[in-house]
Structure formats: C-alpha cells, structure tokens
Image 1 (spheres, helix red, strand yellow):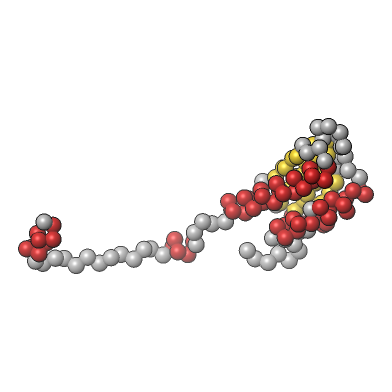
Image 2 (image 1 turned 180 degrees about the vertical axis):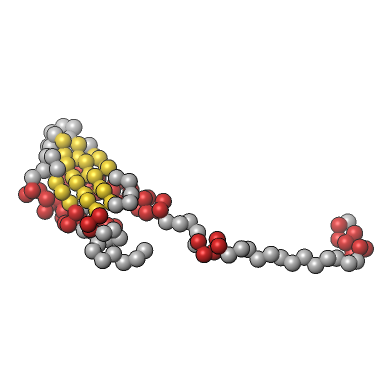
Length: 138
C-alpha cells in the first residue's frame, strides 16, 4: 500500500449525530482512538465517520457507527448494549473487523506478475528404445 499524504484519523473524520452533543465528541474520539492505525491507510478528505444513539441511556438504546470511505461500500455497525461505554466499544471493534475484512477482499490473492509469466514447459525427450518403454510399463 502506498503512503497516504493526509491519513485519516478519528479526531479529524468523526461527526456526532443524533443523541450526542458536541461536548461528547472528544470523549467518543478518545474511545475510538484505536481505529487511527486502521484508518491511516485512507485519505482524510475521503473518509467520514458518524456516530449516533437512539434512546440514549434507556432500555433498548441503539448506538450506530457509520463509515464512508471513497471507493468502498458504506460500513454500518450497531450495538444494543445497555451501557453506553460498552456500546461504543462494541461498534468500534466491529468497524475494525469489517475494515479488515474489506481490505482483505480488495487485495489480490496472488502476485499479478507471477500470473503473467507462463509456466515453464517441460521438454519430453522421445524414447527411442521400445523394449525399455515396455519394461517400464510392466
């Protein structure tokens, strides 16, 4: 993978959606900081993260983390954990797994240069002694 001039970071790409305030943004960015190493392979201007929560701190709350990276499908992770901290960790870890899966799917399985070179052809020498050929098959 080539080096990215402006690597994506959680602090730069994270938006807070419904259920969170701008005051929560720094706390959430700290929780998601472990994603920085995984996002570093993508350009910051082509990467967006948005976290939102429905029914915050109530039974049945649902935390959603959406990730948009140019040239890839949108990734959506959700958690129904009752503890907000645990739910944020859950969506973070799920996003990391899905980013790894996405990367694996886009990488070539084999080296293209090896596929372009035709395999060596084994030269077969004609057997001139028919008696020897019969002896080998018996």
